Image 1 (cartoon, rainbow, N blue to C red):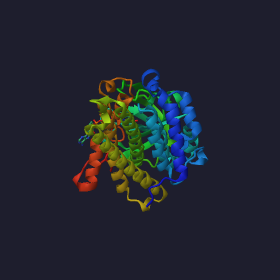
Image 2: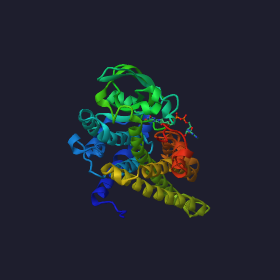
Image 3: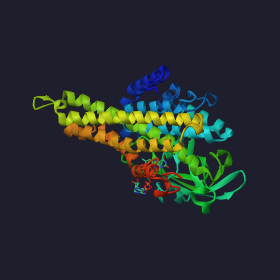
Image 4: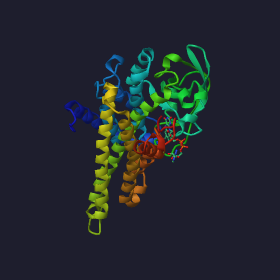
Length: 411
Ligand SMILES: Cc1cc2nc3c(=O)[nH]c(=O)nc-3n(C[C@H](O)[C@H](O)[C@H](O)COP(=O)(O)OP(=O)(O)OC[C@H]3O[C@@H](n4cnc5c(N)ncnc54)[C@H](O)[C@@H]3O)c2cc1C
């Protein structure tokens, strides 16, 4: 057992931290309030550093360290989130690098050669597209369907909802890994997973007015007779649900890393403030009602970090040799992380606002921005809070005790 980072991992962590401190922290508020997007120059700089290639092999232009992709991915997102507390940029990045892993493992060679190099350069966005207006938790009930099979392609009709990056994929280029039905009568066992280019004719999108994460769009896609070539399939026809679930575990890891990084930064901001704020003749931090709470939060973040490192390591091991890792251990570990990480992120930001008193309710601290951004992961994305508990319950009580086949819970 070894809990230390390799010198190369440590160097990468420092590189991303410096980038986050110097390039992201100064513009985070502008991303959230003024620009409502991530500037192209920032994406270009991230691409130059190699951030978008961190999970992609060299043959497609990336710089992945074989066998350590998830460990690097988690570190990258953790550090980026410390610098951009609105969560817009960490989420943009985690979607690209997280779903790239699935593409590396399950896309056709033709699709990998077309898409991955463009993700590495930051030119294209890559996201995930499962949720529909009928309910995100209950994926067995999706309605988006291949209404025709031409042999080389599917003709798709349907609608997706609450999808991150609808505008970015449409404007910049790129697309989303999408779950749809190829044999609707079989429910989730008739679902297929494929990359849908956002500019495929017949695709349109709308955007929602979110409460946070304002630099990254969330919206819905409508598909009207959209032709999707079969070269974009991920895995096999009618086996898409299982591939999708594999991707959710990766996504849950990087989402947890984003919540962890943001919370860590909020806690540091709170420590600095309470050390210098003097009340009743002494620093606020000297009151144990405050310092004990902060110590509790710090200890719990450390526990989360350890569990997340274990989860990332497990996924790396299973990608090297599936037979060596019990997938249930990955499911369980990632569900625990994704259940508690957003909850901790929101709590630490909220606690920080309390320590700042009236100042905490203003936009002169980034704490409220962090709270709004992290809430997105508490209510949804890659399975909501309750769905994670259902996964943990199934793991503990057994498959038969916990139904929900074909939901975000798994299969
Ligand atoms: C900002 C944002 C970005 C998102 N980005 C994406 C994206 O990029 N791609 C994508 O596919 N989706 C995305 N989503 C959607 C997200 O995955 C869903 O919101 C989430 O899966 C929940 O689905 P729902 O919103 O339809 O809620 P519902 O499924 O209607 O659930 C409502 C509530 O009930 C709870 N619940 C569900 N089942 C049970 C149960 N059996 N017992 C108890 N409680 C239960 C849920 O946890 C939730 O709190 C995003 C959501 C948000 C908020």
